[in-house]
Length: 463
Image (tube, rainbow, N blue to C red; front, side, top):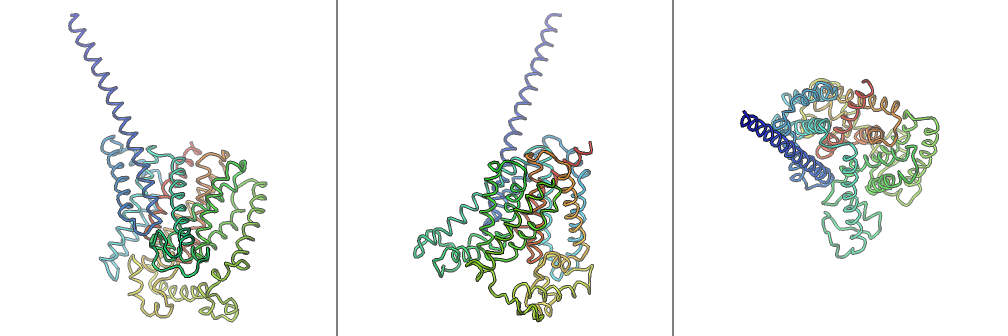
């Protein structure tokens, strides 16, 4: 009898030891996966502003996907998977949007090309969007950690960008990094950074000027927060550095996007005294932008090719880039109205082959507007899904800002920055289609924590 009791005690002890060991192994594995996810996300965000970084980008995405599959298989987390799909309206909207894009492949002028574009632009990016939302829900990474990673990777980008320009200024005849497609003609600081922004082999200038907008929005969000100035000095300085990169490109669209977001910011659901402070800040910021564009030595770069007097006489083509866009929009809107629901297939190359007369008339192979390009390629149903997605995110975000009181909470800061950034991003893309390639990936990566934050905060408020 005693022997059987001793055997039972040993058996129980062994089971407890095994359970404890398994828990320890599980906790160690989970900690390693969390660390690996942070590294993969950092590498992905580092790679996106650069031209020749697809290998690093796809490797990072593969690691993130592997962590997701491991968690589903090993931890049997299918309940979280279905919960993520069931309780998140944004996933359903993006699912419908993806279906409309898939439909356009069957009507494409080049179905094979459109199928490839559908895989790269939709399947990979939307899957990454969903996986990251799931991993946020599983607490593999937090919003605060995401903000730290974003700031760290942006500092790396800013450092490389400024150092590459500085070495052309210090060593004009024998620069250390010769990765620029043509030589710098004038050893002036702004001329160097202007040519660097446009012709560097490291960066794609349109992608870079869209990439920096989020950090400009983050700087504005901290500027508008009712917290001591010392607590918001670093994010504001980071925002200024990114705005400087946007200015150095001398592109007008990013500056218009930032100015438009600044002009709309008094409409944010903040307290009255905050709005008054925002109004004063905005007057100074807009005055500074106007000075840079019209009165500073940089005006020759900003206003190059523009003839404002031609606008009065209706000669849009002679007006410059903004005037030419009016002609482009009118030309391609006519094509959309002919076949509003049947696009030419995802991929801008299809526009060129489908509308050769429009290309000749407008002198551009696409509509220079994200919504017009989407309508041309995929039909207006895709545009409607995109509008619903944007509207619902803004509605959720403004609702959270209206009810949230903890201004230093990472969720509040993230939502405020994102509401501002959404206005900047889609304004920027209204002058040139930036919802593609690496910037499209960047958009979906940033949208995943924002979407998780919106849904989880709303659920907490309704509980």
